[in-house]
Figure 1: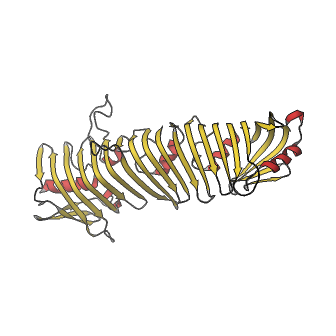
Figure 2: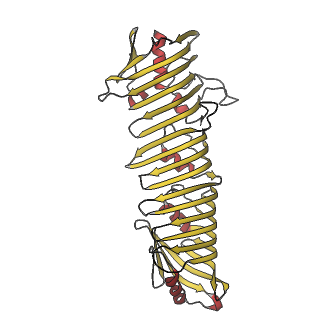
Length: 448
């Protein structure tokens, strides 16, 4: 029964707690754990089909046909116990054990292989909850490679296994939907709470790979919700980006920050909903690349829909500065960086109004250059039956607290050699159709 107790620990903590040359192969019907209110008491159940355990050459095979070894779990801060038909078993655990950090976990119809070099877990359902994180997996296979594995480095000398195989997962992990031969995706849900911010992620995962300093992902669908106000939905997401080598826990904010500083996204479609501003972006993305503090983005088309107007863009190319601390999900950060240095070109921009009878407005071949908040804008307008090129010069300012972008027009080049700023402002007042755009004298203010 000594080895049966060791099996309970391995299954529950998913941590290599035994000596070297240790391995376990177990098929689990159901494991549930709920931390007692005061950290002491009954905590769940463990039901399994079979288990094979090897410890320093000693082999134990358990075939749980008659469910003799099904057990109830009992927990104290420094003790883990099990109650079976054969009696009660238990042993001491450290107060800093992962068990004391878990609020809830559940595993159904799963298979676990754990040894000195790997953690291989597949199952129909897995959930994990602690103080600030919740994770759910369905129909999944997860493989983590230990640092002592001879496969981790072809030139490495095999060493003793890591004391914490879970941490090794953040240096070498593969997740996919190979739970069944006919299954192609794993379903994952993540919810995190940090500094009063809430992040929810839901995805159908074709493959997800973590390596020492890289992340590769192929997602059939992805949904991100930030504080219930900002929602991103995307399909066919293929991502390649950097990862912090020292990452040892599921910290979504840390992962997002590192990833967004060296990033490549293949063609995909996405929608962004801002509930506070009551606006929606629809994006047909050709590619997005972040490299060497520069953001490159190509859009086949984009639509911004608000309560009173919609704007349609085609053939959009953007490159602008991307500071290390900037968040690509924060429009304030993107604008701040792009106003310091950026270039935007748009094949066609068209706006329509949903409220009054103002005519639609459109511009072709729009190019905007920004450098140190100085702006040069060039575009084609249709006037008197012909397309005419105009150029606008100005200075930009951005109020991050008020979320207002201001453009002070300083000079113009209009058709027929006209250079009147007042004339330009007259036509802009006449044509601009959004309630979020205000014009006073030669200053345009846009509320975001």
